[in-house]
Length: 157
Image (cartoon, rainbow, N blue to C red; front, side):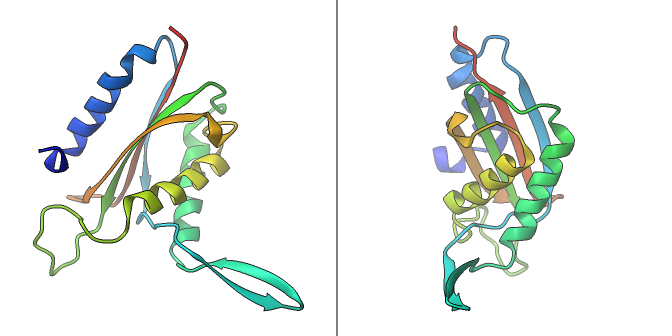
């Protein structure tokens, strides 16, 4: 069953499905330590006659900063060709939870959004419009909390 597929199988499936695009493209793989935080809604308020928008979650900014900082360390120069991204989020398991998979919040799409913001700020690629494919999964961490990032530059065949 696909929903019970392991993260490593999902990463392998991602690369196998898209391998026909790759021909000499750069592959960057690294780990980001920290608790992945979803980018959710923003709250707005008026201050000195101007509307100010702030993130509704206080965990988003530290996560995006951790993603950007690790990306700056790992990437020598920004990718300029189309890119495929694989993300595997390792989330902390609450002490009272017995379920195998994190089928509750945070939502995967919101984790992707916050992480992509950090990847862009950190300089993984010159423009996030270069991302042409995404594979992402979330699982409970067995040892480290964070996210595995694999970016594969796509070259024309």
